[in-house]
Image (tube, rainbow, N blue to C red):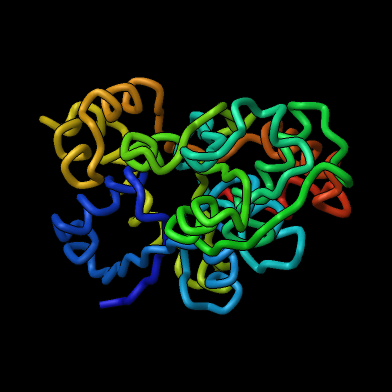
Length: 284
């Protein structure tokens, strides 16, 4: 049986992977798929792909595009979640900040440089017409627990993270969400290390077929809203809202979308150049 390592964030977006693993769907096809949670998000997974710690990552679109351009030897093989990610702009509950305008020039907590929380801080700054050189400052906090500590203790002033994941922290009076900042593209893609891709295309197709069969009718799974609420400690009405606005994909990200992402990253001076579609993607 072939062992394959895959990584993703421990969030509700990836429940479909957990369900297929629990059902031994991959082992039944001779594949020992091992899931790895990455609490540090996109930056941590980019590092893991580069180091060969994982073969596959379910990862933020903008983060992996930037890292492939920066030298990560991986390719995007499919969009995983078609809809944008809704990033909440969070501050400590006791802070004086009331609106995004109040955060101009203040310090953003980020999991690491090159992470989604880092890149989206630039998107948020641009949305608010800030000076990207003068009005952005960063404090690396590694993960969500680090953000709680950082904002509570005043090491950083605000933090962008997926709004439904942080909703329990808001409900518990630790964070306040003062704004939303949707990503302007599909949020998650599946990326694969090139050396794995070159030597294991049949297995990769099998893995994608299994997960795509599950995501194509994910919302129809009986009591899936209750399962998510229980497993991720979220309110049922929040889960139902999230399910209503979230769509999975079973196809490769389009060239138009890849160009859109690159143009945005280039405009923010986060990548040095715009590269051809086939440098970033591989169609199985």
